[in-house]
Image 1: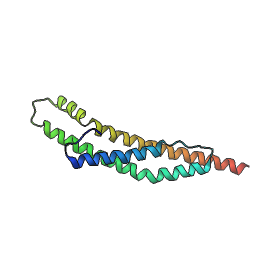
Image 2: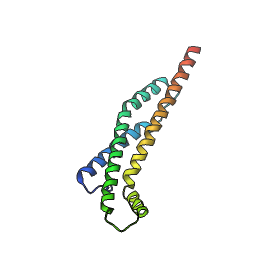
Image 3: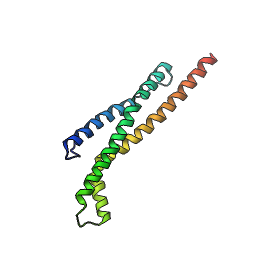
Length: 132
C-alpha cells in the first residue's frame, strides 16, 4: 500500500482502516435474490451488523484526513506560496486519505439505500404470500 503518513503509527492505522473498509464494502456490494425472503432477511441482518464498521471507518478516515491536512499545512506554513497554491498542494498531498473518507461516506449511504430496498422487497414478498 502507498505510504500516506510518515508516522508509522498513523500509517498502520490508515492501512487497518482501509482493510476494515474493504470488508464493509464487500458486504454492501453483495448481490441478493430479491425473490427469496430468507436471502433478503439474511442480507439485511448482515448489513445491519456491519453498519458499525462502516461508521467507525468513516470516523477514522475523517480523523486521519484532518490530521494529515494539519501536518501538511504545518509543513507549508513558512513557504512563500500563496494561499491558493498551498490549498492545491495540501489537496494533492491528502488525496488518498481524502478519497477513502469520501468513499466511506458514499458506501454508508449505499448501505442505507440497500437496507430500504430490501425492506421494500421483503414487504412485497409478504404481501404476495398473504395473497396466496
